[in-house]
Length: 475
Image (cartoon, rainbow, N blue to C red; front, side, top):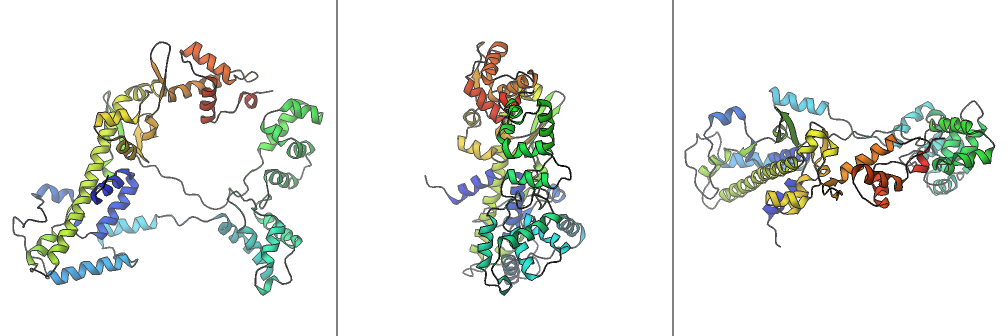
């Protein structure tokens, strides 16, 4: 199938989230001089009428200062400056204040772990050679604060450097000395090679000797992860209570020494769809404040009026007008399609809005596509990366699409409601006798008339990040 540029643009805009659409609109406003945001007050007074770019203007407009040439030169200079990486100077007044406020509140670019720790080097008195080695070690750390290569490999890499400061060749002992200094000003486990070394370094830094804790890390780390406490008790000759206390101490150690450094920017979720309970009825609407209303700028009227035959201005104006029209239509189509899809989703998920996840209904994208009279791929694009704010919380729109399992009564339970039921059964189990996946499947059938295989329960349990029954057992 051959897709026109307009179709491709419409599909791209449909897939954008509210934040991404705002950025796209700002880009289009800068690049196209005939596209502008509607002023609500002016729109009420104006009798807006959009003409075809192939037609002539219906009503004469007051001529603006300057001719076609000066306006074109100004527009081209504006576009040239922007394409070269310079944005136009903001005007004064309220708009200028808003732009300055936005710039002031824009966070700096994120720092990496190495960049953050480099600032700590000022606390160390290092010569040129040792400072180079410290920086080399820091840039060899991964995001967790672990060294990706051994000190032997790093020493070999450093020795291949051409800097005069690295003669004689770097030794492992020298790197270890610098690494110890880095640990003294940051984290005792920075530069560990694996989890075991990371934990041991923190135990060594503790002033009190803890032989059982060390034994757990050196000899029984896998047994701890699998909750095999009786095996550990038999091997160490210690009581279960002593081992449980040692495990609690182990949990206080940090498995990711680099987590406290660097910056991770929080993901901002801006819902596209708002669902509100108004007098017992649910209103589904789009957040219009996130998407400004666009229109064609009247500046093109004067350009068309003054254009001379054969000077190329008329063709240039028509091309920009068509581009602006296509973009406005694509935005309107996105809003309309998303509204209809959201209406269909929450009409079918009314039970969820009333009673929560237990009343969640199985729903497939094809069902919504059939109701809205669009292709299933359109539904997929429309809900991708978008969120809905509901009385039950904020959820991705994709959350509302799920399969189901038929109960013995003939009703259909959604996967979401079954997962919640599995979580409830686990929360109600006896800590000293947790339910196996087979027992969870039996209880679902006996208590909820839901018959599913044990392997399906296992899949749902893992999706909920619930450990196995052996790992959940309390001794």
